[in-house]
Image 1 (cartoon, rainbow, N blue to C red):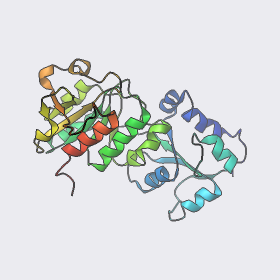
Image 2: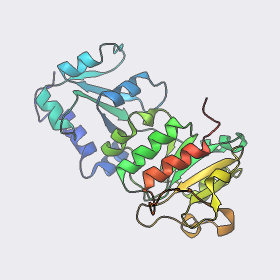
Image 3: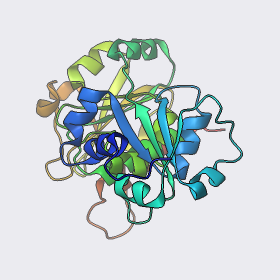
Length: 267
C-alpha cells in the first residue's frame, strides 16, 4: 500500500500527465489511463496498449472484482495518493499506467487490398475532446485505422484517452504521419475532404470504394496544398443540411461523415 505523496510512483504518474507530459510520455514509453472504463478495456483487450501497473484504492479494487488480476501488477494506494496522481476532480479509484504502443506505419499497406477500407486522417487537430470523440466514433463505425499528422494533439494525453471512452484499445492508431506517406501506402483509397463549398454530396459516394477521410484543424481547416498533394488527387464533398445552421463543429461533421461512409458495413 502506497501512503506517501512523495512516492516515486506518484512522481512518475504526475510527470506523465503534467505540462511536459508529451515529452515525458515519449521518453518513458508510458501513458496514463484514468478511470474504470479505461481500465476495463485495457484488462479485456488482447492487443496493445498493455498495462504496466494498475493503481487502485480499496473502493477501486472492489469495482474490478470480476477480473482476474493475478497476472497484473496491482499497486494499492490510499485515496489521498490517488487524488494526487489523477487529473480528474472526482477520481474513480482506478488508474492504469500503460505501455505506449510502437506501431509501424508500413502495416497500413495491408489495407491497400481490402475492399471498402475506411481510414480517418486527422490533420493538425488540436482539441483533445474532438480527437477522442472522433476516435470513439471511428471505433463504433468499424473504421480500419485512425492516423494523425505531425503537429496534431497527443492522442495519449489524459484528456484524449478519457474522451475515447476505451476505444483506444479497439482500433489501430498511428501518430505524426504525413498524408503523402499514408496515400503512398494505400493508393487504392480515395482521399476525401469535407467542404461546405463542394458540389458533390457525401451521400453520392459509392460505398464499395475505399476512402481516407481527412478532417482538418478546428480553426484553419485543411486543403490539398497542406496535405502535400495536388487538388486533382482529392475529392471534396459536402454534408447536405436541411436546416439553417451555417456549419457543424469538427467532431459533429466527422461523426456524420464517418457514419455515412460506413453504411452497409455495420451488421
